[in-house]
Structure formats: C-alpha cells, structure tokens
Length: 249
Length: 96
Image (cartoon, rainbow over all chains, first blue to last red; front, side, top):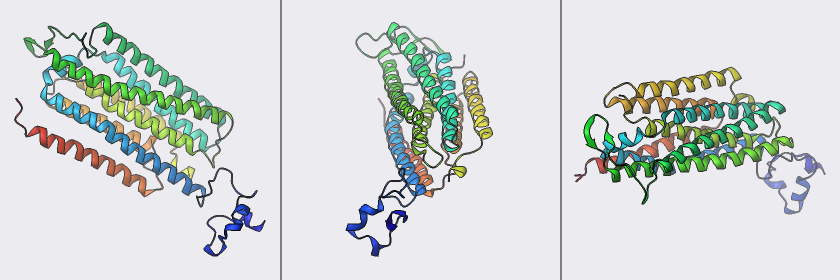
C-alpha cells in the first residue's frame, strides 16, 4: 500500500492500470477529486468554471440591456413617464437589502475559510432571510403593477399620463407598454436568479450544518458566493436604469 | 491559499458602507437636473459599485488565477461589442 500515500500526479511510468485502485486508499484526501493534482488546482478549476458561467450570464442579461437601451433612446418620453410610476423607495430599499446580503455572503466565505462554524451558519441564514425580504418587496411592487393595470397585455392601461417636462402631452400607452414589458422581463429574470440563489444557499446551509466545510475545503461556499454577488451586480444596474429615469422635478 | 483570497473583515465593512453610500448618492443624483448627464452619472456610480463588489467581494483583486482576470476582462469586452455594434446599427438607421 505504498502507493496509497503517494500524491498525484503519478509519474507516467507508474500509472499501470492494475495499480489505480491502490491510489484511492486511506491516504487519499476525501475532499480532493481523483483528477486534480492538489487542493489549489481543484479550487482554481471550480472558480474558473463559475466565472465562465457568469460570463454567459452577462451576455444573457446583456441582450436585455441592449433591448432596453434601444427602446429607451427611441421612446425616451414614455420611458421617463413610466419610470416615474415605479416605487422609488421600495427599489432603493431592495438595493440596500441586496448590498447587505452581499456583505453576509462575503462574511460567510470568510467564516468557512477560518473554521468559524457559528459565524458561517449565522451569515448563511441571514443571506437567505435577506433574499426572501428582497423577493417579498418585489412581490409588493408586482402587486401594485397589477392593481394599476401596468402589466403588459390586454388589460394594460396607461391613459392620460403626462410626459415629464411637456405639459399637455400624453405618453403613448403602447410605447409605455414596452417599458413595462422590459421591466417585468428584466426584474422577473433577476427574481428567478434570486430564487435559485436562495436554493443554493439553503443547500450550503445544510452542508455547513453537517460540518462539510473546512479551511481546506470550502469551494462550494465561495462559488455560491460568486453567484450571489453576480445577481447583486445585475440589480445594481437594474435599479438606476429602471427606477431613476428623469426623476428630477 | 485561503489567506490570500480573503481580505480582512474591516475591508468588507468599509466596502459595504461605501456601496450603501453609493446607493444614496445615485438616488440623490437622480433628483438633480443634469440634462443628458443624469444617465451618465447613474451609470458611472453603478459601474463603480459593481467594480467594488467584483474586486473585493468576489476577490478578483487577490485571485491567484490570472485566467479568472482574463475571463472577466473578456466578458466586459464582449458585452461592449454587443452594445456598441447594436447601437452602431440602430443609431444610424433612419427611424420613422
């Protein structure tokens, strides 16, 4: 069983098929997958994979931002009138909620790296709670849109709304509808990412509860944190673009 | 290892307070009439906030892998291509 204590990678001369079983013996670190040479390489590979996934997410949201940009330039008057109907205080509160959740996420990663169990569990729970607070506030906003008939579709109403800065001119409802369509698709997709993020953090919480994370192995917390921060960054852009068009009196 | 990729707690709290201040600033800036610059100011503040989150909370600053930095720069570059070429098209069309 001398091979069992040997670290990867084995020199070519020793990778004989018959001996591979011995390699997975008692000397092998259970947190290290077979195909990685060492812990750092495994961590870097996981992190790089997450960053490439986030790159695809940026392009995914990028298409929506591009559509937003085109229609904002074309129908600026209606975009500004429609943006003023959004609840600024709720949007700003949600921004603060997400920024606070990013802090708890980064504290959770720190706690996992420094074997602080109660700090890790506490911050994971706080993150999940803040995620639900965000979704709750979003639900209140969506509810208001339904009540005001600002949801795109047959019942959409945006009649006799003044264009800011142009007294006597009314916004074209069909152009305003494009703003609300973009609003619902962008914030809806963002909310979907939040729901997935909460799911990831519930999973992280159960794994942390079982004591799976150590200073040597905490990649899931780090990777889950990267996802959460990305969702935060998307909101950091969505908030001024949707809520703060032409707000000055 | 892990010591290199995690900043001290004090930095995290400072960044958190800066992000909250940035949110307040962007709400305030929106109430001031800056003409066409309102959008530019809002986007600049948002980009600064996003940069702070990426550098300090997502640990790009202390990343041991140069590949991660390459992926981030490539992402921003391709997003820029997406927006710039689309706007070059729509911006030069004769809209009805």
